[in-house]
Amino acid sequence: MNGLDNFSTSRSTPINKMSNEATLVTLDDFELKFPANVDECFNAAYGVEHWSRIKKALARPPGYTSVRVNTLVTDQKALVAKLNEALKPFNSRLEAAGRPAITALPHESLSDVVLVPSASRVNFPIQETLARKKIIVDRLCGEAVLRGSDIFARGVMCASSALNCDDEVAIFVDLDHSATRGSDAELHAGRKILIAQGKAQMSRSEMFRAMKGLAIAVTVRLCDDAPPLNGVLLGELYMQNTPSSVVAHVLNPQPGDTILDMCAAPGGKTSHIATLMQNKGTLVACDRSRRKVLEMKSYFESMGLSIISPIKLDSTHSVLPKQDNVISVQEIIAAAVKAQTNEKLLPIAGFCAETFDKILLDPPCSALGLRPRLLHACDMNELEQYCSMQRNFLWAAVFLLKPGGILVYSTCTVNPNENEKMVAHALKEYPLELVPHTPVLGERGLTNQGLSADQAALVQRFDPSSDIDTMGFFCAKFIKTKSIRDVEA
Ligand SMILES: C[S@@+](CC[C@H](N)C(=O)[O-])C[C@H]1O[C@@H](n2cnc3c(N)ncnc32)[C@H](O)[C@@H]1O
Image (tube, rainbow, N blue to C red):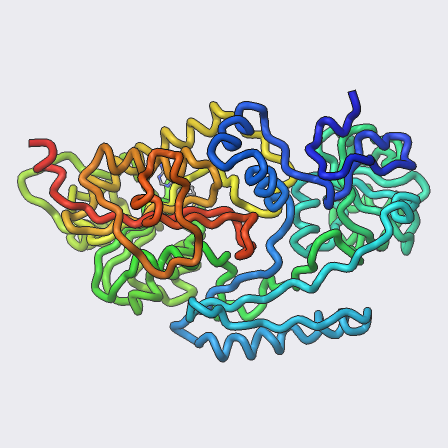
């Protein structure tokens, strides 16, 4: 069997020249690979050609970086100007290489989002590159390179035997985790993808001795070049992809609301909700991980977002048993503040049924919308476990929401079972109805996954293969039509 059968490729002629040619493709030929039963399910939902386009798009980074403006301290116009100032060193490097500069732009529909386009890619000759010395990195490092990173010593798995500082190298990603750190890249026989060219900043022996330090400066990628924005204008912006920034707007939080974010860490959507509430009202941010809740707490404090109560809580077990007196969210928080001793987090075990005006449910999901991804090891059984967990979260959300309250459900996956089918499940099991929402930047939902055409038109699906060029994402907004007790009666 030709090793290329392990990939789906758009080119019939494999690139050659290496002894292990059959196990090598370039990023341009590559589409993400899934187990047969996942492909079968997604082919049925999207159609074979569309699913193939999605798999190709998932392996590449979007063509721009999206940042959300902290409107409590600045505005979109001012942030665009500051970002363009901060981009000057990157633009100087582009111009020195004869490449066009990039300009940050306000998002046309979202007044608190700024888009920073990546620099257009530069093509390089593949065969010449394959004749260079080689570096092989692991999957995570390869994905970081595609997002604009250089390569640090810890990320290098294999290097050609006689690699010296300043050598020009071809950069590959090991797709099978088969590379042994420190081995000769020329002898690696597993599947790998060519993703970039670079220049060694250390000799081979230094690379494997050093635990840190820049090993390879990436010079050209087989994708657009994202500018380095980590740590830029801290406090004034939050790195958040566009669909995630849509979610808080869809929830439409108002000052004075009582809102629950059931799965809040690292707190991107929570901080956006608090900002839209103008830091007035009550916002509970739950997460099961104590470490993540402590990190969120410090982040919210550093941003001055005082209305947020970060709580370590399993949201699927956050509904308190039925009692004679309904205790409000504010009373529960006040009692916990009183009871708090040396413990850093509020001791809260749950909330009374039907006490929140609005709830955001952004649960753990299969994350099959994140870009770029070069490997996904999920099968249908694992995907089903996410669905089962999401159904438990939905149950708790419906109990905690007041009648007439709003529930927004979102995922960062293209799996229809976690998206359209989960919405169909919610509509069937609970007193929920879909409601129109704004802004709508994505596409309508799929109509062959349990939703009627009218229902599919009320949800929002971000397709990574569409012109909007974002991550895969999904969002639905429900209103609770009656009390859960009326349903139980
Ligand atoms: C998709 S992430 C949430 C991202 C977040 N909404 C944001 O925009 O920054 C899902 C989160 O759910 C948390 N989680 C997992 N199981 C949970 C549970 N049973 N209860 C509460 N949080 C849970 C995970 O720790 C993870 O931080």
